[in-house]
Length: 252
Image (cartoon, rainbow, N blue to C red):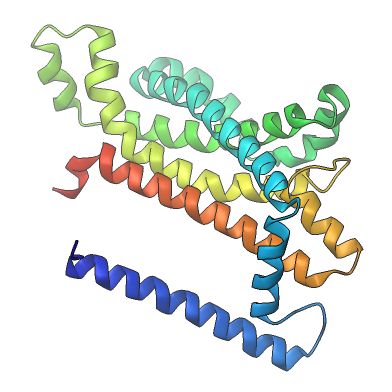
């Protein structure tokens, strides 16, 4: 099947970008001449070897934690964000609580979650969920609040119920903003995940990277970094494709 020109251009751009990153990495490794920065092909070779070992297991654990956290944050934040955006009176009452708690760096609560929930998946999932919850909540609430009132009035004139408004007006209108907040939250979730997996745990890609560092196996450490980067890239790509499928009207 022949690719369309725009798809070919996208593939070439992606290939050039990857090549440019590897060239930059290669030159940096030559300039620094340090075992802490191995050559890119040595790291890629170590990645292949590690995937045949226990890296795939650690990657699966981290992927599970990120996916569950993002799903929980979305399920909790989206309905609440739409509800607050649709009801200005309630939003005004809830706004002080949101403004006071949103800027607090939730990562400082990690020791508390470790004590209360243990060192397993639960503490890490709750921490990531809490952090991404606020990002999705604020973005969704603002999108619902700024919805053109004419859309709501026109649907109401057709006899729509409150549930119909949520389903057919507010949710579709907020969906692009929700997916954007998920893309932004994904980067935050991966950063928090790495931090959470470096404390009191023996599972996850963060543990794999820090364990390789402690053994001074830098090729394996960079293999873990590449694996975590690829996981984030494919999740971001999945969200981007999801927006193209679910929000067709934004490209009209």
